[in-house]
Amino acid sequence: MTKPYIIGLKFGTWNSEVWFAGEDNDETKAKWDNAVKRLEEVGKSCANPNDFINEACEHFEKYGFTRIQR
Image (cartoon, rainbow, N blue to C red; front, side, top):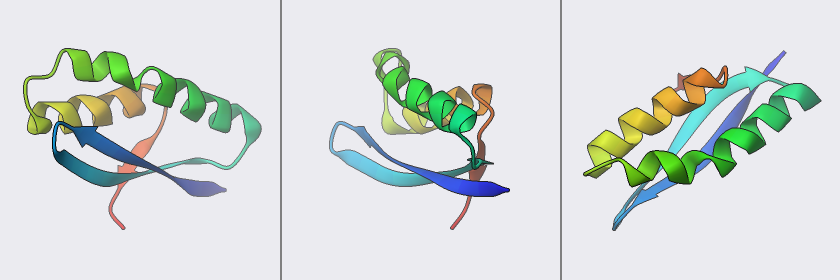
């Protein structure tokens, strides 16, 4: 069974809530926590909010999460 994983992304004054889907189990929760911890590294290489949201989505997809629209 899948469940939503939600994160508030911020870059400068811009912010957005982004939803992802993933399995509802302890292993996936651990992957989510690890991806969130490493998200700051993604932001360091981005020049603007558009770059950041695209890179952040790719980052979470590498951990097995699929972006969803609410």
